[in-house]
Length: 497
Image 1 (cartoon, helix red, strand yellow):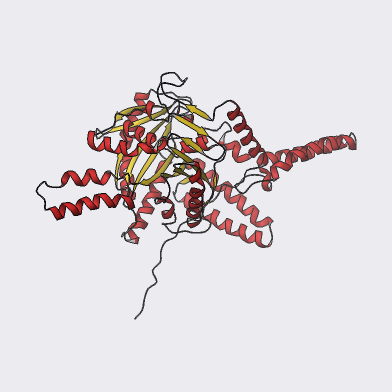
Image 2 (cartoon, one colour):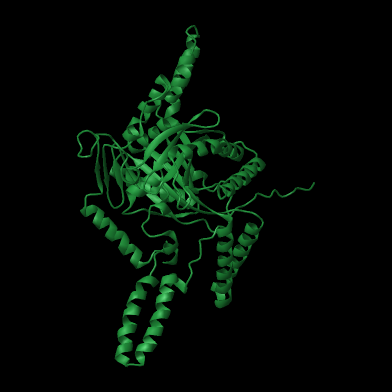
């Protein structure tokens, strides 16, 4: 009797974009060092003292560029982060108070920070379903939110899982051909069951003349089941912008997005997203409201089940009070901490690598995992992969020993990426953020241990978003906040540094 080995597909070959320049200096540091050498040589024609006057400042400027943390940031970037935090704290920007008793005009509970200027509207798609659209006026961006109920991987044939992964990759590749798309975010939110969802489904369906034993069993199930269950929600946000130099009316943008939504939803369904649907403006406001005040989750669920909706508006979805500290973000009835990805899993992984991170975590009020995608157009993708391939070949031919062996592995990965891109595959930049919400500051220590265990099991490295917890919290909400669109320093210049 012969047995065949079952091969399980693995995934990987993601690469951090290689920074141009010499070693850790980056492109700016490389220009400075060559310019400094030329200036020093010219100054040496005058005198040795003049050469030293030019050379010493250049060296002092370059030393902080060579010192980098594990996530690749240099001393200047760390200093800028701290200066920004000190300035916000001195100006009182780390405190937020809203509502009728606050000094803010209008007396509404608008979301704070990056979401404070956002406005919400509602339209109808091609199937006459309501969908909400969030307008970010500072960048003139428009965000739609799609909800889905993934089938999950339990009791699913491995071949079906592989098909879903392939179709998900195809859906991401299609994003690079979406006109005006700036970025997409997939958010998986988990929380303990509030205890009322099952009751609303079961108790109204019990027949008045049902046997007492059957009624007792159903009532006991309703009472005990929620204590060991959790709820999970998946949202996909798509953020669009106008072409450079063009301005369009909001009505025109809503009409165009209404036509695109059915095609986007069909792609999610094919990729294992289950029942997919657009979220209305009221539903988006409810999700944001519960994120800032987890204690009202049961009330929101009861209102939707009993009254068909809450009537909540975007201008009332924010917290009454929020306080940002170095490593935490306090908001109404919750305290949150957000982590950011610093290193993706090395080598190859299975399709279930993030399963533990996406599941509900004990001891937390709510948990959100946000996968942020930045689709790159085909022309830019070809230029990026070719530049990365040349850089990898240069590193492989300039090193020795172990460094050369690792560089040779990088060459193979870069060659594979270039071949796949030439065959029509899309190139997508991605990152990951994780927010955990608990009841008190004292519980954050246990939550941090839980997050470390989850990230270790998923083979990713993450660090807390210290001194920017409020902004990071907003990025994990289904509101379309894209980190690279909110920075003062352009993304291209950050890569050069």
